Amino acid sequence: MIASRFLRRCALTVLAAAVLCAGAIAARPQSTPQAPPPQAQSQAQPNNSGYHIVRKIPVPGADGWDYLTLDSSTSRIYISRGTHVQVLDVSTGQIVGDIPDTQGVHGIALAPEFGRGFTSNGRADSVTIFDLKTLAKIADAKTDTGPDSIIYDPATKRVFTMNGRAGTATAIDAATGTVVGSVALGGRPEFPAADAAGHVYVNLEDKSELVQLDSQKLTVLNTWPLAPCVSPSGMAIDRAHRRVIIGCHNQMMAIVDADSGKVVATVPIGNGVDANRFDPGTQLAFSSNGEGTLTVVHEDTPDSYTVLGNVPTQQGARTMDVDLTTHHVFVITATFGPAPAPTPAAPRPRPPILPDSVVVIELAP
Image (cartoon, rainbow, N blue to C red; front, side, top):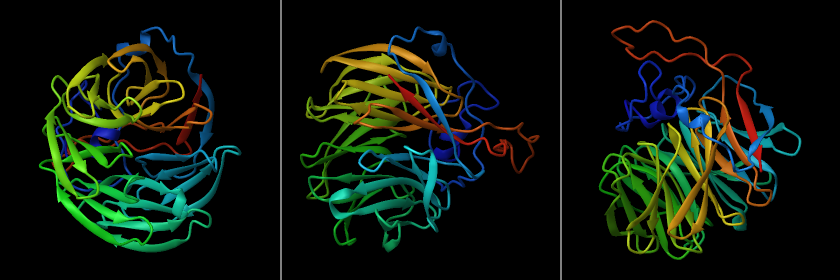
């Protein structure tokens, strides 16, 4: 990253072409994102995936955003908006609730078996625990500094935050909200995934490595190099075939054996990836790219993958989630105005989000 991971999400190469982020770990104000990277040639490649835009859902507010989390059982999408979380009903296209006072929120994790949701509040060094039905706040849990991405691990019934500034992962008991402990990761963590068998995996963006954690003992089991992947960002997992799917900022998706750490395959993706997902029902892996594409990749075998296409979305649409019931993909972005002139105090000024321009884009096969 340049000055923070958010500058990768919303500012990757606004004034220069395709500057790869090297990752700083300061908290980022999500209300003023920078412009997305310019569109790249990948958009011109054929789209044989069948995916296409079916709807654009306006989202109120001019704040920035980070991760999306979709709950297919309730048709709700949780959208992090810097200081609060909007809850969007996909079936109606309406905002049905808001979770306030989540300062610097990045991600949302859901534990439906306990009726609880969790937000990672990067500026507050905390997690907000809320009721999934009422959206009311239940409690706060303290984390190490800079909680960013967040996931729920069904094997241990724990929520894990990846703490950028601390270089650690914090584990929280989902049922009680009690902090169980933390573990040093040896670098700046990006996005994690859980295999539901006692392991959590997380990218180290600054070192281009993959860490395998014992999610019960809170120990590092392995740290594996990801070459030729550079600056890993998004992550997903194919639990059935034990494959970790990683989006890399050198426009590559790396497929890693979850047990050996070996990179078994790579395929090209669009520019500006920040999120990856895997749909076991279709055996498709997705990469949402800030250039304005969604790369769709088919898992032919656990070690062989085919790019089906780069589906045009909209510039800046680099975070997403997938409805595993309908197989629809949702990304979020906005339209940006011109950036102010650079100054010594602000050498990379952020262009404003234009009023009423934030949209959730729905794509269907």
